[in-house]
Image (cartoon, rainbow, N blue to C red):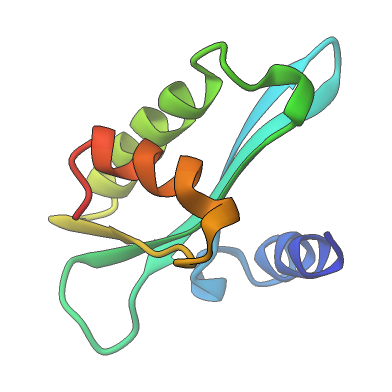
Length: 106
């Protein structure tokens, strides 16, 4: 979480030149999910999905799908033609891999 706070602070301080963009999901004034994404340095029109985070209490409601769709749309308006997402191969990340695979990521 500390790294996420640092990236938000950097994005606020530097604006678009930070390379970090955020999409937030709020419920009753509280952040319940977010994505962080941005252009991949030294590439043309390629973007990384750095993080997608949804509180455990809000999983299984379609919020991750909504955040990802909003992120892809925002990246496209910034010129993205391809978005990349990475995750660990450890067993505890199997649901994350399934999430990405179900949405067309390979």
